[in-house]
Length: 187
Image (cartoon, rainbow, N blue to C red; front, side):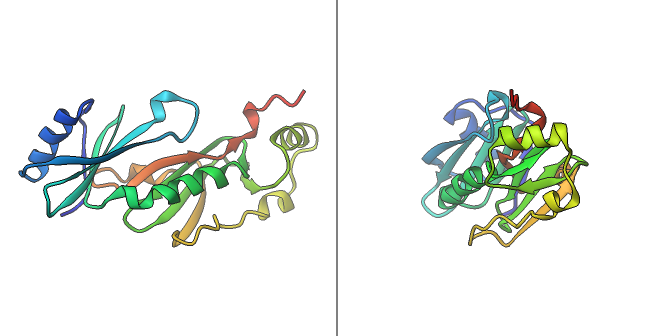
């Protein structure tokens, strides 16, 4: 079984079962359900529903862009997603900040603007003011360690590029957002 993307909106468990039966016909029962909320915008939320037929376990991830069926129990990596979301609040950019997890390979991709991405324990207001008044030098953005989460195999930091343009069969799920300093009012 492989990851499959569908340009279909699913809203209910019945919708999910209909789509799952297109993917693999069986008697599906929902095992669990949870929400992935990468930021404050409702349109970016994904609902994860995990189904089983007693032998096979499939996760169906749905959002406003469609649905993805993944041959894996995503409830097992829910704590990893929560850890990514918490740690993403210490990474800063001045554009984008979208953070994607490849749920099959456990690789992380952070998409930032041309200005770079930095890691800091300093407050967003302090960093936004520094960016506006002084700008950042290379040292500010060279300090960008990989996300230190044991389950992750690697972290990619990329300017203005996301892995989701891979299209059909994409295993990349939008899970978090770094802080966009352009949106911080420091006064």
